[in-house]
Length: 223
Length: 223
Image (cartoon, rainbow over all chains, first blue to last red):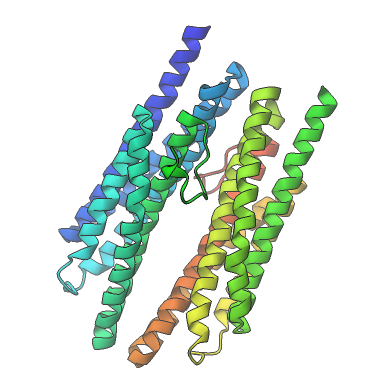
């Protein structure tokens, strides 16, 4: 019985890692399709989202079954309830990657507005946050989770900076406006992806330490 | 024992309704602050968000305690796991109301860009969706949940229309650009709020019928 429970937990863990890996790939490809102006790759991101949705449904079912049949306690219970939240965050991240890809397609039909500098920088930080939040979850590494949380303010600052810069392009020439709006929304989608990886980092601390850090700005710094 | 369990479920239900009511008020006030150009009301929305965050933490704890101590089955188990998701959606809706209010404050420092027509219309539909998704949850009314789901495409269409109209204002005069960007983002925030109420509607169907309708476009129409 105990062994079977461990196997089921292991299967849940494996599915979560697979879902996370799909989402990481989607984000990476969405960013790549923007930078390399590759609309085929952008279309692929849109197509592949179904896989993420299927995994979400499967993981949710695994969680409810584990709760119903196994009545887990303490860290196992926290792991399962957090999995419900993590999967929700991953699904939204997948959707945001699709939203980025959907903006890349019309952008690529026009000449490039400007050489992209800050968006790729923001994308790199965001992608590392996503990867690290998942690694923190897999390895129950609260230190790494904390570092994800700390990087979120850099992403927020970059988003503000990108918004301001794009506004100047819009004011300069009305012909720039549509493309600038697309880029603004891409920047905002990246910022939201970073937020979701922060949510995952918060769940890691909750699973390991039974400590809720959500909505408590300084909780990550507590000893 | 059984009676105590019902009391705890009742307390969870009561907190969820209270949280939903806070979020409804936040959205209503954010929209009102935009339409009436009332920056004080906008600031109030920002301040009051803490209450929503506190309720989220409390509800999450209630859910985990119920799962740990009561080991519920069937509809009660579905109710509790769905509550974790519903609270997540409500918290995001609260944040989006704050995001709207934060855009209203700078908007009110400048003359009005244009008479608002479509945004209030979209806001009214969205607010009704939010209210109905909560009512559907409270009364386990899958028909009402279905109607929430159906209205989402109208909100999406209005959002697209608002974007296109605001683009024309931006192109007309660079002096309009900043205000138009604020309004575009407000429109997008409303559209996201409608999405979250659709998520809640999906959970209602899951609680009542043990049928997952998420990611399945036509599932709501099945007999």
